[in-house]
Image (tube, rainbow, N blue to C red):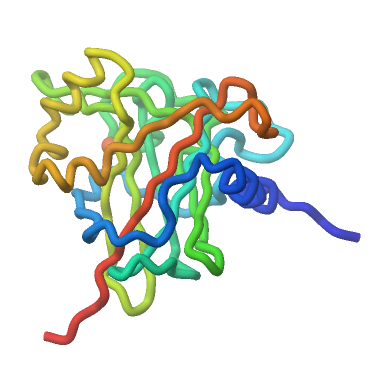
Length: 224
Ligand SMILES: [Fe+2]
């Protein structure tokens, strides 16, 4: 008997959406993905569906997103067996971490972190919630973002952050004023800001789910 795991379901979706043509260009060199600070909330590892803690537990609060991506080398070739970890705030901007001073409540049904391994063509997939913005200090609000760490033998470890293409003036302003994002060149900023669109009606995804594609290029280890 075939046992279908949650990972199979989500990764299976990658093939479906790829066939529908909504993923980004495959195998095109990007220039190395820029690194960003790890931030204080790096967690332990979990699976790649953050919207529930287990298949029969209640769903997390918030807008469901499917975050697909591909880990590539500097020639644009997909890298298999890369470890992709992500961690993020919930829909209300709160991390599940004792170091987060944000007084908002933790969502007890949100997983807050996840992990996937790239397949033979370098693809990875996560089902999660669009995170909320949150105050970094009295004068600075961080735009919605997801932290990533990617590990692959033969390549430099990459820690970075992915941002959401703005959907209104407020989100645009937060991106323009974000001190971490603005530490990068305009070209590098573009690599980290990803557009999410409603899933095609022909797909089997939830009606209001949004889908985005984050291509990641790793730098090969170089002898010094
Ligand atoms: Fe953060």
